[in-house]
Amino acid sequence: MLVYKEFQAVVLAGGGGSRMTELTNGKHKCLLPIGNIPMIWYPLQLLEHAGFKEAIVVVSEDMEHNVLSALNRLNLKIKTDIVAVEDAEDLGTADSIRLIHEKIYTDFLVISCDLITNVDICEILNLYRKHNASITALMLPVPKLPEDFVTPGPKNKQKPETDLIGIDNETGRLIFLASASDFEETINISQTLLKKHTSFTIHSKLMDAHLYVINKWVLDFLVHNKNFSTLKGELLPYIVSKQLSKPPKQCMDDKNTSIVGVDLKEDIFRFAVEKPLDELIRKMSAYNDHNSDLEDAYHGNIIRCYAHIVNGKFGLRTNTIQMYHLANIKILDLWSNDDNKQSCIPRIATTATIHSTQMQDCHVDENAFIDEKTSLKQSYIGPNAVIESKTRISQSVIMENVTIKQRCVIHNCILCNGCIIEEGTELKDCVVGPQHLVTSGSQHTREVLTDADKLIEI
Image (tube, rainbow, N blue to C red; front, side):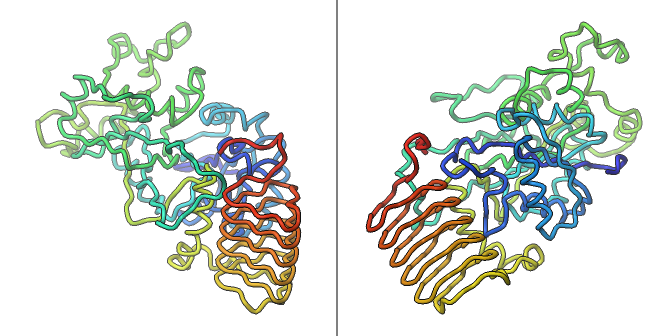
């Protein structure tokens, strides 16, 4: 791969899907089908659409072959460097970046494999360029669930995680980032922050999309400081908070002092050093990012974090069963509104055998067999699936090698790899685990059907 470029791209695809183990047992999260296309296709296609020619894809060792095989079957022009990391599913996102640091030579973009969106990455890159930022993060509105939307499986009483995202109203600086679960009733804001940012909003209906543009010095800091395991939960909040700090006098007096024996977490300014040309341009420019005073642009801050808020675009993270199912429901709308992105993906594979005359808004993958006298609506049928006669399927995801026998009724369900639904079965709002057998004539509503040792609460 080429080394010298403005930005490199890193796709984090080694996660095990701990919040959706009913689906990922026996199937890698990044290969779960969304609209009958592996999840990993979406971030790679997003990068390709923005002009990236190459991307580093971080996976776990046990999935390297499967991911490589899947990518070879997709119509992507972007070149991928698959990097297998031992036990990647147990590592934090910052840990994964640290382990591949030798492959990263420039400022870089990090994107999670579970981000499904049609945003324009170029806008985020331009915001980063404009301010020569330390980190720029994409923020999306929290997805709204349709009124009639039901998540397959038992009713989930647990509230989704809420991000608290503080953004300066004038400059767009990202000045506060935390989870609402970190606070009981009140949020304590430091006096330093209030004096420096006199007008800001703390948003609770924005979602950190796990797409970041990161300055190379942040990676250097991360490599030397192994206390950070995750990007969103640990490193990013720390970098955001350090915007309020000034370099220690020792750093200002001698920036070339060796870092050996220094407390690196306290001396982040050993790494956050502005390039001489950038500093000269900033000082010669009349640009000022604030109009409330005559202070230098950015108040002289070397560490600068920004949030890029996008409205009117589709975006969610498929890291739970709820969001995974929503993505499959919404993806057809995204396709119809964005012909440039997915027009090359056929709705009906040429190798599929279909005898049904009653199909509406469905995608059918390779070597699937659909018998006559069947009715299918708004569903995705995976490769090698078999659907026998007199069966009705609606608003469901049928993964690969699934067998559904005669006279079954399947509504709003997710059927995982290799499961068998015997004849006369009725399933509504259910998840059926991999390789599970649902006995004939049974009726189930809002259940997770899987082997007892695989049953984990959603």
